[in-house]
Amino acid sequence: MFRLSQGQLNLLETCPRKFQYSYLEQLAAPATPEQQASMAWGKRFHLLMQQRELGLPVESLISKEAELGRCLESLRTAVPEIFTTALSTSQTFRESEHCRTLKIGGYLLTVVYDLLILDDLDAQVLDWKTYPRPQNPARLGKNWQTRLYPFVLAETSEYLPEQISMTYWFVQSQASQTDKPEPQSLKFAYSEAQHQRTKAILSKLLRQVTDWLQDYQAGIPFPQVPETSPLCKSCQFAVRCQRTKGPLSASRHHLLSLAEIPEVSMCDASHIAL
Image 1 (cartoon, rainbow, N blue to C red):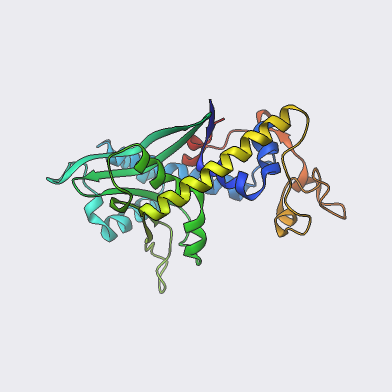
Image 2 (cartoon, one colour):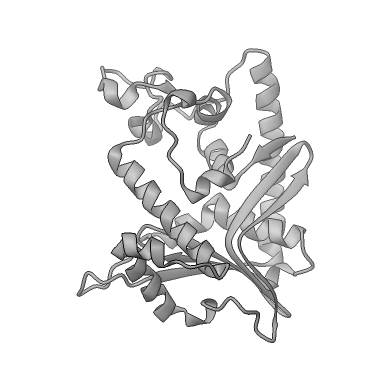
């Protein structure tokens, strides 16, 4: 069974060849110190929210990093209703880091909800983002996370698509006049029309992946984006794909096998599996 996460679907849709290099051939460029720091902070925040949801002490995490505590309290102020570990009279289920899988053909689609809250009428998927709210919400709406997470929930539960919503909370957004964290959110409703559209797009993409995998076994690489694509300019595989006209810095394009790179953990890493 071939596992796919939302991150892998995004990459397959954006650049199949990059998916081949990253996942089938296990190649990667070393993360920069800034990227490592950002991913590590994101992992700590997700751990904080998970421990709080489980009713475990979080003081040790907060005492080591004041920024975690500030973001937590700002989020508590913004949405106090989600800061309860007890089910309300209408709630039937709530769980942090809730994992679901959906089998389609030879693929196992895997999702991990940062917080899933179910009640008699609605199903809420909450996701913590440790970067500022994006300026272009429509772009996030097209991301496979926004499409796949409600889709899998609708397919694996009795909730109608119209009863499902997904809300992103951007916990490190800043207040306009101060440096105090001011979490912002983006909520995406779901519908039967969206569900059917996602099912059709997903089915087509998975058929393509099947063909690409068969070709790959026969020695034919995954497709590349057009040579005019702006994606190649910032891609660590530009040299390997022969998409650069001049020498680039060795540090940027020196590729290592994943086994050579120290593991950089983050919550989303648990979503990635082959």
